[in-house]
Length: 221
Image 1 (cartoon, rainbow, N blue to C red):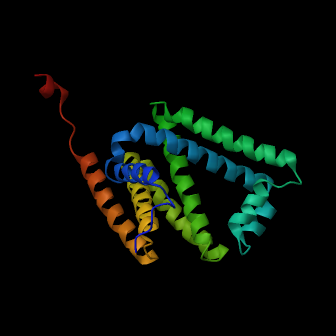
Image 2 (image 1 turned 180 degrees about the vertical axis):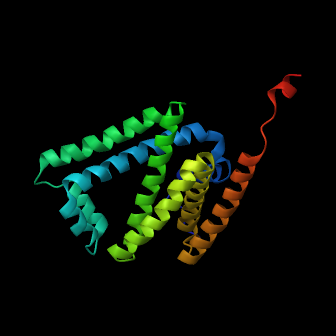
Image 3 (image 1 turned 30 degrees about the vertical axis):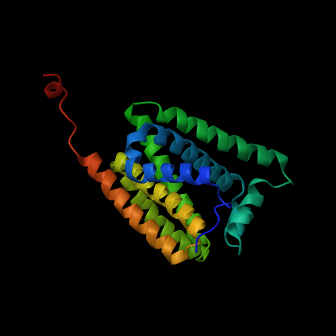
């Protein structure tokens, strides 16, 4: 059944679909921009996680073990009983994002290695929080460790391919979500659409990244 479109809006739908399809199939074209944006998110999330582990370890473990871990994490970050702690959390969040953004603009090997490491770590943290909504803390942590090793290794070894993979997954999610909201699709249709688009987007981007670059001398001559 088709909706009247008022829940999203034609302009938002059009721009969202264009952005989603671009990220899904041609995200590698805007690699530099995507790396900069992704670095802000990665640095902010990882630095905030480090601060929470150092200064709020007990409350963090209790919150992650609760029935609603995401809401508990929000309460820990923005607790009204410790204004200095909230300030430290916000400063670490901002500092991490700005630092990684600066490093992402550098072309040296070491800054690129740091950016790749933080990118992989941040994705592992996001997956951990998603898994935590369905599984107990111990099981989620074990799965997180296994996935984190795989993600981090892939990000460090083939960072360009990893960013293309993330771009394809994110773009397919945007397209699938918008179409599902517009046509009121069931979850299994949303998941199937997302899986197909993500698979095709990953194949397309990895194929184009794997194509040999043209020789400048042959182009000039």
